[in-house]
Length: 294
Ligand code: PXG
Image (cartoon, rainbow, N blue to C red; front, side, top):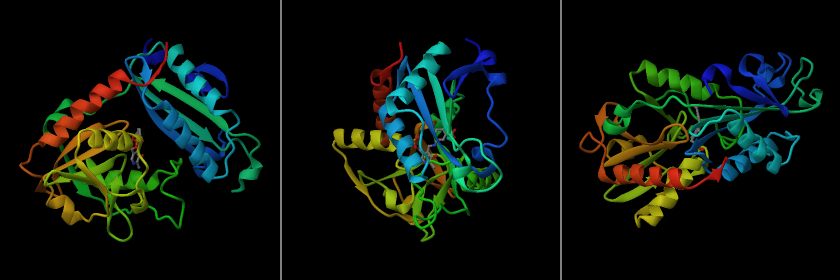
């Protein structure tokens, strides 16, 4: 099915993409009040669907938003949206908005949350990024702290990440590192980050302000399976500058190597052996696991 005629799920019904709409009075638009997930499917199977659904409901719970359908119904909505579009490989954007209400911050003005499921193909990073690695820079914008909205909530407020992305692109990078307010590395604008030094692998803990990434978790499982040492530790820019290897993980990027960080070459300036191995192993698990669509 062509991208021109995508069928989009909105509150239990399918609409052609040009007719898939929510109200301008939806608090998702007015206040960024809502949550979302980005999910991949490969070879007719949805990767870690249960984990994405669980994180979605946790994000919703944290912002006091009641999703009007059960997790089972949500799972079925995701699968039926992909099937309706006859897709095998692609990307799902699952969006829950607070719903339509009057002008005014109170979420109690909104009677019912809205559910949007978009299933589409995905435009991937160019192959060159995987062969040679990304140029990554430090962003000025910091990750929000746990005393404001929890950075674990995958909310419709992505402005700090958007600003960080603008800074990264302006500085000539493809991705940007976001520090927390203490100056420790949290993550990138849409990816988690890992460092390899002397054969040991480390990644910032969720307490540093990163998203509890589903790709991060899958890669952590792979690292353990491969028998490498793994630690969740606070790290500063210094640990990145002096690393043997740095790589990023995320639903969109999968596992992608870093070539330079703030203009310092990482390791030998090309993807290292551990990163390469994890890229290969990750590909195997996405192609052989997941919830069948058909
Ligand atoms: N950190 C942040 C801030 C994210 O938004 C990740 C890490 C990686 O998490 P997962 O669970 O995907 O491994 C994300 C994920 C997009 C897009 O359209 C962004 C994400 C996921 C999918 C698509 O840019 N963010």
